[in-house]
Image 1 (cartoon, rainbow, N blue to C red):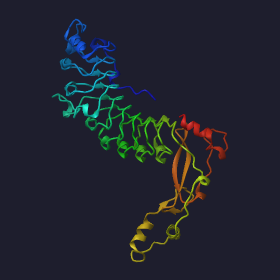
Image 2 (image 1 turned 180 degrees about the vertical axis):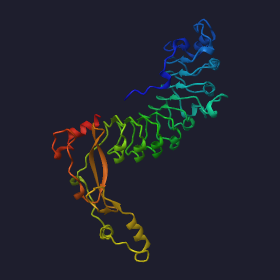
Image 3 (image 1 turned 180 degrees about the horizontal axis):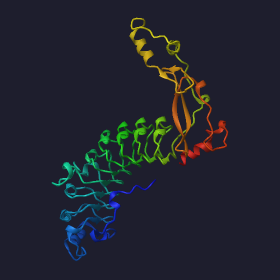
Image 4 (image 1 turned 90 degrees about the vertical axis):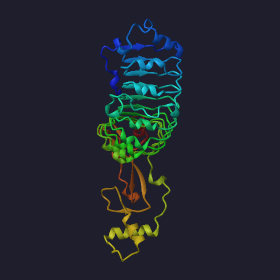
Length: 369
């Protein structure tokens, strides 16, 4: 995956404003002793500290003296045994909060992550990066959707089964990382994240992507490997800025007509197609209302050389399409007849004949992309 650098990585006399207690095997009592002792705190005034590193220790909670660091912007609590994130963190002007690889549950998070500081923007939050990966969350933390200025959200490696439908509120998001969960469905609302540049959904249980994905015009990285995807929405070709697409370990297949158990069309289907093909438009009193509604439900065949329609009986066909000048990806299309399946063309710049353009070689290119 491409590296998306968060705002917290900007270094400006960082060493002078950092308190580093990382990898010292500290428990909570020992840490509080360090913070209370000016000598052990390297003689730095608490008001000068903007970054505190408490990662890779033996902490089960946060120190009581944390609030004395009134200008703290970056707090790294990763790789401890913390079971509760207290409301006190919302009283700090944090820009980055990293609490990955702990023992946090949904119930142990603050009910609101909005800043309780008087100078918080519009009563909102200063938080721009939140990392809760590798914890014990079972559902998407709804309080996160109130963080309107958040740019980087990492929730991977939990047990989250669904994505909040209110995700659309997070209009500042640049990175949304939800890999390694139990997600089976992606809501249409994800397509409303106009600033999103990286979407990580790998290692989940996703079978279908919403067509709204095509609205993510700024998306550069889309990681979908290790899911249950059999095809991608055809509108995904609209993602002109996408430079990284990972599809490996999905049951992506080319479905040939001869392998499909097609049901013969019903008499109603055949009659409806004939009416549509003839161009007749029955009046409101010519046929029953139910038949009129049925005729209005006709779908056009996607083959540009065909003017046919279909109702309930359709041919599902996977077509490989050149994508980003680098991949050939399987897109699902619906046709009115097997005769409308167009021969595959070889990949651009390839000498592979058309008949073998959907070969295993092309499939491996997609899966390894």
